[in-house]
Image (cartoon, rainbow, N blue to C red; front, side, top):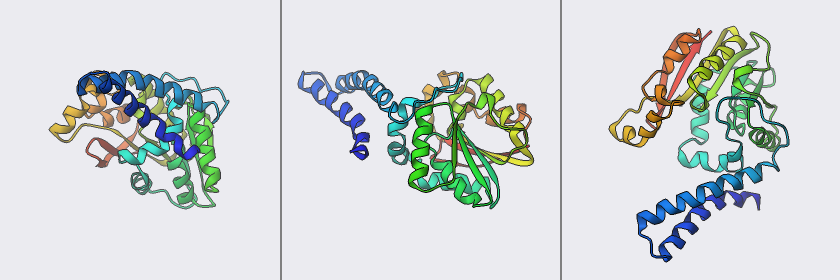
Length: 264
C-alpha cells in the first residue's frame, strides 16, 4: 500500500482538472484551477503523512526545509532526471575513497548518503544531516532496507553538530538554493570548518542556464532572492567568500545544474 501513496498527488491534480473541464471551464482555466486546488491539498497530505516518519522536532533554520515532501521525494526525483545516475555521478566527482569520512548536508531521504557510505567502505563512514525530521526518518528507513551503515541526524547547515576537521569530503546536493544568501555563506563557512585540512566539498545545485529555453523555464528563479545570484552564475563567488580555494566547475546536469569542487 505504501508504494502506491506516491500516486495520490498526480491523481489529485488529474481529478481537479477533469472536474473543472466537466464544469465547463476551458483547458487553460482547468489547469490553473487544478493547480490552485490540488497543490495546497498535496502539501497538507504530505504534512499529515510525515507524522508517521518521525516525531523529532525540526532543526532551527532560516532555510526552506521540505518536511512535507518526504513521502513523495524518492518517487519523483528519478522522474525529473535526479535518479541513480545523477547520484552516482556526484559520488564519482567527489572522489570518495575507502576510509573516508563523509558528510552529506541537506541529505533529504538519504539516497546519496547511502551510496557514499558504500564508497567509503567499512573503514570509513557517512553521515547525513537535514533540518526536516520526516526526511531523516525516511533516510533511516531507506538505510535499514539496504542494510547500510550510513547515519542520519536532524540538524541544520547553519550550526553543524561536528568538531572541526572531522570530514574528508562534504557533499551538498541540491541544498544551496534552499538558503537565503547570508545563510549560504554561513553554511559554507560551517562546511569549511568541519573539513579536514586536505578535505574537499562537492556541491551540485542550480546554476546559470545554458540555453535560451532554460532561461525561459527558469525565469521565476531570477525573482526569488534565494536563487537570484545562483542563476546569474555566482556559486563560485559564494565559495570564495566562505574561504574555499581551488574552486573548479566539474560539469553540469540537465543544463541547469552545476557541479563545483572546492578545497579547504
